[in-house]
Length: 302
Image 1 (cartoon, one colour):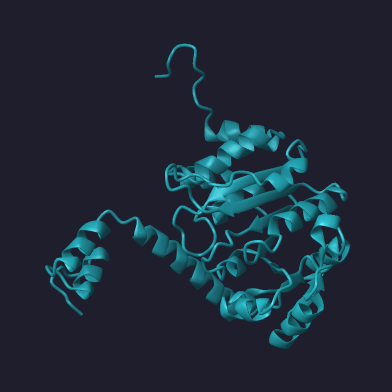
Image 2: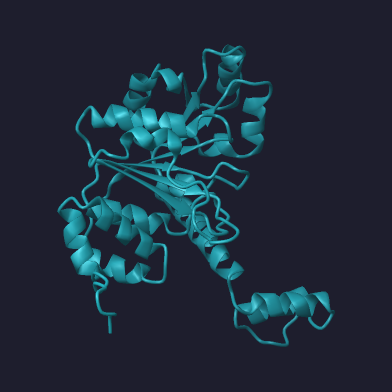
């Protein structure tokens, strides 16, 4: 029973109707629900959903991912397209919420009703994306957004999972000694559909472009996102890109996504702490602990 003077929480159907009517606040409420334990309730209420274009942006810290995304939002809004930005942040160690909040560089778009900017907390998820991202993308598709721009954490987690969600996957790098090599070591070049050298007016940009072209067959573009230089060419490349896929590659990406989500769930398993303690104390071996975690024979040891 709700307290006197306080409105009862809106139901999922009511929120969905309001969001479809243009309420950005209701859309935000739905995205909050899919981050929590009401995720399936929201997904069940959506019904059939046409897919939405998702462009993923990843890369190392300081490369200019947020500035690039802000410029892309402006370019697509000039076409009168509705754009949503999902920015995945490292989780706050205190609240579990998104630590960085809505990106300051995107502030120019926060009053635009045709733009939704949302930070999602990674919450310990290991793939560089929040576990709620696939559900959030489906919500945005149901709300008739034309494009979702997805920014990953970029603080050291594996970013490979982005390729399972986004097409194209855009890797943003800045000029610098060895940046292309470091990106290759991090696995970023393996998932890149488009490579962007941002801050291309700096020394070393031409060398970084050459290094990248030697390392990968992906398209390499240059950009000065803070000035809008190269944005039309990047938009054209995004619009023109359609991943040449086989069922095997789609299956491999889906498998990676499922494994990543499963690993996140296992990290939160209520028995994990006790089992880790038992292994540490020598009361159980790791093989038996894994069997117990998966509900196998408690005495099995390999």
